[in-house]
Image (cartoon, rainbow, N blue to C red; front, side):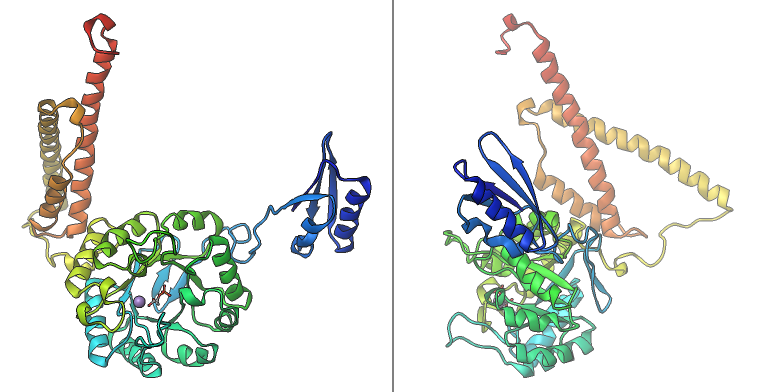
Length: 452
Ligand code: PEP
Ligand code: MN
């Protein structure tokens, strides 16, 4: 902490600050400048003198280290991995998709959703049992019976389940029935609840408060961590701003900001973050692209008739399409079953013969790849050089065709990786061509009329 004295501060006022610092068992280092004195305060708990700013002669107090310790990456540089029933969230792990209804409405609704989201590749099932609704007249959730249904879904489908807690007295019931306890945005600063879940052995997903700064959010996480629970997952779910086109403003910059400040895993909620079904997919992809460890998405068998948050819930088909897109972009791995079971090649002879065939194929592939690049260059030559770029829609269609057009031991994702690399190399050939043209133009004398 640094205490900056006013230029008019007297020697007595400087001594007063120093005395208080030392009385609290901290050290004070004075730097006497021509205009003013600055005092560095060092010690294990500088927060004890956070009131120094009110002393006479003090202009401002600047905090250097973060007010949260356990959540900070200064305290723990290696990233936390949270493990729940074989699912891992955190450093280097695959993007974990959590999906399910906003609220558990019935056994059929939950089981049908669980079966579908599991088939589509979700790794955690969500479902609200206690709904903290803005209006007391809105559906409040089924309560304990919903937790029991989540437990049943967990047992039937093998997916860990997450649900929101609103009352500290419910911790034992949540411990019995769910795998991850969610603290909702409206309760982010409910410190009694945070301390209660901090004493639980279940991981806690802590949503960002509607108007919470990142620092306040990390301090809320600190409550859970300091109560003894090291497994905290942060969830960005949008904040209140002046914008009304979306339900909330999904602050995706929070993800890279958090990465510099904390070791805790980060999940993005594009459902509450936008409030509109059509915006969920794009913002889910964006969340994955900025490096979230997971996504939490509301899915309902019949969004139009959902008892809560239907407008932002994806139907099964939309959710399936989003999972396909996450797989295509390789945020999510394909299940192994995507690979054809047997190699589609008849190979006879010894190992050397098979290797010779591979060498032969590689040579042909290299020739074909060069021929393809020459054609890509031809396209670029015929295109207006200023229109340099590529046709994203055509590329996407090509990748999709490549991924599904053949059968063999390679999965669609593996095939897509190859074609993706081909497209990237083609673009680099085209770019080199455009650059060489513009260099030639720059070299031309000004009189030639190039305008430069
Ligand atoms: C929810 O996840 O259903 C929920 C109520 O979220 P939030 O706390 O982010 O509003
Ligand atoms: Mn909801």
